[in-house]
Image 1: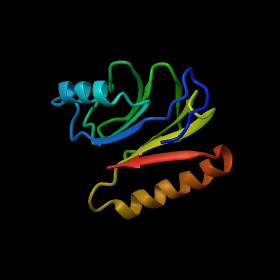
Image 2: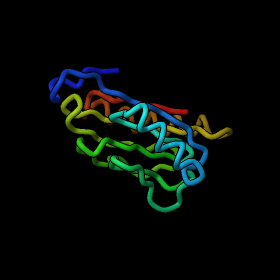
Image 3: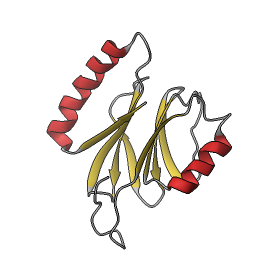
Image 4: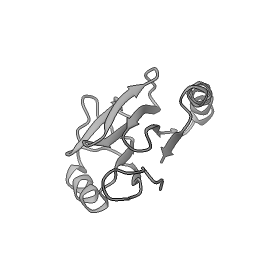
Length: 137
């Protein structure tokens, strides 16, 4: 957890990562867990969503069928970087100023390719943006 500074009462940044193995069949379970945990940032893997990804109370950014980032609606979020089937990156504003967050999924047999691709993107992001927080399954 990180201290997001003064956002009303002093509090910590709450981040949760979850390999859903499909969000449609688990929508009630997902909604209940989010209601209990109440994260600021939710990093999702294996969403299996071909169209839009929707999480009540959150802005969602995702790559179809694989990964997504849900940012609490009180915060600003914008997707950054090129589309990738195995990671989704966004810039969240209002947490620690600006923070780059990303959800990563590494399917069996594609770990090396995914790490190489992610490594290239991370080198550029860290040089430009500074703080980066990644979560994976």
